[in-house]
Image 1 (cartoon, rainbow, N blue to C red):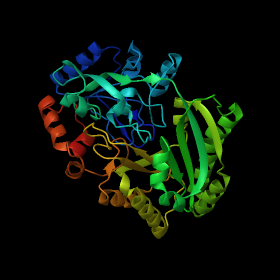
Image 2 (cartoon, rainbow, N blue to C red; image 1 turned 60 degrees about the vertical axis):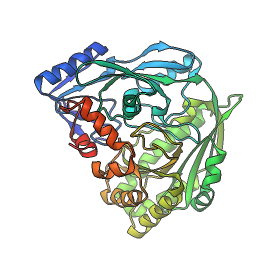
Image 3 (tube, rainbow, N blue to C red; image 1 turned 90 degrees about the vertical axis):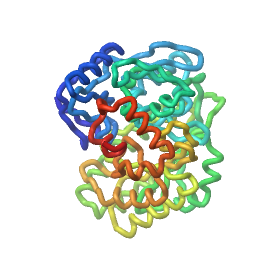
Image 4 (cartoon, rainbow, N blue to C red; image 1 turned 180 degrees about the horizontal axis):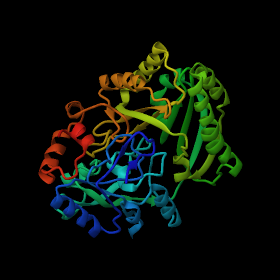
Length: 426
């Protein structure tokens, strides 16, 4: 059975597909793979744009490995295959929430943790930074539970599935809270001149620059004591379904047919941007709906280099006269101590470039990647890039330690695939 990811740019045909419903099933698969000389990987919901999840051996589909194993006041242990959208709903029923999260909720918990999925936050980091314990099946078939203070914990939180197969994740949670969400249009020049102030003043800053214009949609989320004032149902549908998906998808399709119209399309989109505000439960304020399929590349750069990265990206697009429909998204996070987190050891800013799936533009990604790598950028593990182990060893201080730990835990490369051979070394 062939596997195809969400963006339809990665596919593979494993020798066997299994659907484990218990840790014991995962252990059996790992031991069977080792005994038969095959490799084994667990795949999530296919929201990575890279081949990180692919295997030619045994592919594990964790659709039956879902749900909450244990509850506590400040932490919850969730099985690896649980989608984030389901976790959000389960937490909300108990009056609990994650401190921060990304804007997509279709991923499994394990897949999001392993690839370094992040949101945006002045003080709170990505999903891996909210992990307090991991359970994983190692290459020898044993089950390890790791906690802070252990090297394997800091390595495996963003482990790419290279150190073992995650079967359960314990996350730190807190009482449910409201966020005051504000959306407004600002010129890119104003944002570049006030980046430090914007970042300092807001708990969660996320903005989108529309190429071929000076317009940015700036989204800020800050905690609110209430009362709740969520968008009216029609307004939520208008923004999240019609404008951001249906109408945007039609604009992308038109731009694909007539690329010369893209600058004008973006100008019209910029003119339609308006200010709005709401107060809603956190997971609704953090997340967004994304129906229009795209390809994405995202780099994390030191936060002090963000303005330079954006200016050079804008200048590159103008100089090369590329027609880019999708906005460039910018987010920030504090330092992380997970070894392969893109934010390891430094306050980071993320620059994400997207292309409409039917009209890939490799030159755009290559040009932006050259800018980001000059600025010591680190590519998101689940998004398109061309970096290899030689480059990554220069920008991750604990890279050699990660590789050494992998050599010890999986010397036979039971969990390897082509992507890991590139980014970690064969």
